[in-house]
Length: 258
Length: 273
Image 1 (spheres, chains in turn red, orange):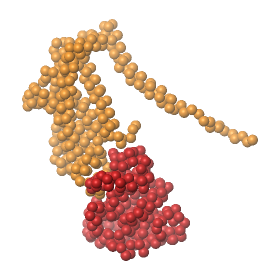
Image 2: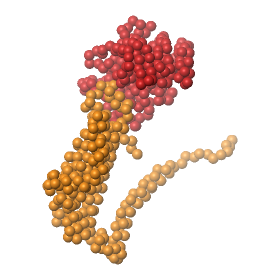
Image 3: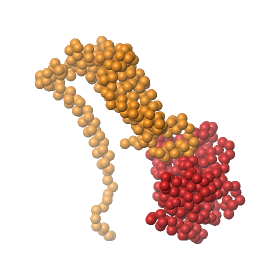
Image 4: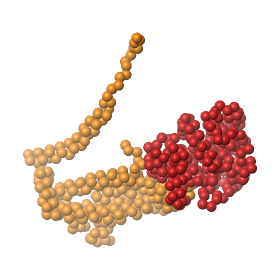
């Protein structure tokens, strides 16, 4: 079982978040083990993005606690890949990817090497000197991923990073993300509304209830790694997992529509 | 052999490109033809005395006057003086307005504090402050430089603030999540994000600066293009007045070309249109 014997990286206890009278998140308690690809899936408006923003220090909790283990000295705790276009239009691909390293004043040689490595991994080496407006949506999201990985954080927080892409691009990027992630298996918290995406990428999938967002269930994904995104579709276990999660999610999606 | 009915699509020449080129050539011709045509019509009208040459001297006689003051050095001296004042005025007004404008965009309290002051003083016609400026700074260079600085200040400050405020929130979130400090946020996000707006402010400021330098020199100076125009009025040398107007127009034109070039260089990420 992935993560069963590993140290806890993120510990959330009785977390609640209110925006005025609206209860966005309620009584969430989860442990995320080091090196786990943890996917959170839920209907629109269930507060999953809010949960990620809390982990990323962009929102405060109303009550409850969030503990994240301190990073090794010199390494950042987390990087965020945002939903939608978040790379800076005024920086080249290279400068975008180098942003995190520059912000933490990494030595120039380290920056050069790390950025070069992740641009190569994401197939962007040839486009290093281009500006975002010269790239397609899929390429831009690769830059956002390269930027997050190049910062070399202990935790990656990903907020529906592929939701704006078409299905073909999304499938390709799933495979690329898994390939890069396999290198050093960082802890990932990945938000999505896609059950397929959750089962393709995750070790554990947390299904959230519709507003207010609570933990409905946490499902293990016992699919072997490394995974082949295409072959997964032909795997009966994969189908069973997707079907199982849909069973949990269906009522919530219907409830969210009311 | 089977025959498929309908029209076959045959490879053809792309005439679109040729048409576009022809169109561009036509546009360029038209934009050269309009000023040339005006000058020509003016010349003819002046020679035939359709217009009063005391007020509208023929372009050829204006050109003659221009040549005369160019040779005497009067033109060059006055132009150089005006350009120098414009330069220092731009620096004196531009740098603080840029910094202040961006800081106002970043900091809510600062915006709340300064916004009413700017909103209240902005509508005052800058030319009406000239007597006060002359009183404070005297007839020396400083009063002219300050006039330009005041003119440049508002459009740049206001546009810089607006430029920062329109920056997509997500870029600031990225800055926060990558632990960008205050200075880094200013340098890598606020400034470049606001730059397209700031350039618009600089262009507006350049136009205002030119207007104000001409006015300031007419009243409170013994040199410069504005002074030259005013002195020409006092001696009723109408041709020389037109020379001054012509030079100001040229300065304005060259400035806007230069600023467009600067914009292209500073903002390479703007999609070419």
